[in-house]
Image (cartoon, rainbow, N blue to C red):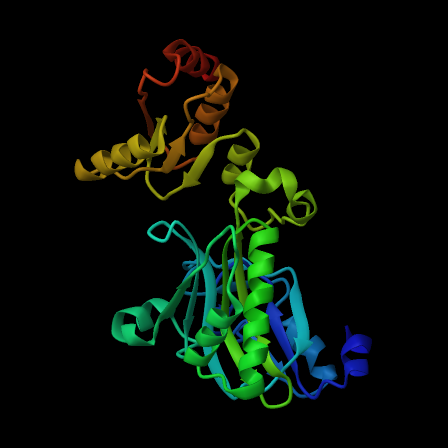
Length: 313
């Protein structure tokens, strides 16, 4: 990293804790250092800052008090940002396809902007068969405050991001900020990308990069078993088929004073061995004191459910 950055002529360096959480810059490390994102002037300082991140826990507003372990950092060239904008591509149910969303108010919570400054949010629905129209994308770039050559650069970035969105089966590509640098023009400074798991079979090279080390072990096991499982903080386990019924079951548990320990949709094509695996996953949570089974027999053979539970017990 030192040789690469030095050869590139970097004047400043940014060190980022590589963890799956937002708000790293305002987080607190168990080493006592504040912030999981640091800018330093000398390459020699990178090692010192990294040593106060790696091996420690980072607590942010998204992690809860337990924090997450930092095992890696990213080191890159730090660039000055003259102006910050927001840009994303998301799938929108109302539009029936992808929509480009932009705002000149970047570098902050876009939900806050949408609520308090809705006139600063610009959208551009995309025909998924024809793709984006360059002239319309140029208009969006202008709405974000880019002029002249910067407008052309911003349009190019947006079109390339749509290419990524389409070719990699993404469900969301968010750049915040899409910034203006005094010496590099328009730059994507930070990104969040979500992918369609249903397309994993044709994105094998990308999914091979997936790192499960920060995921909940029970959720990873459930994925490997073909189950839709999300761990929660309650003590009543839920084994249900159908996402809607699963959420309704959790609501009923909560309504009557209980706390669901998980969301679990075994689906309509579940097999006996998967039911056993699901039951074992739920019961392996030490917080779980009881398990509520709520099955709609119209989409699954209840004998498979019963036999799966018996095998687990």
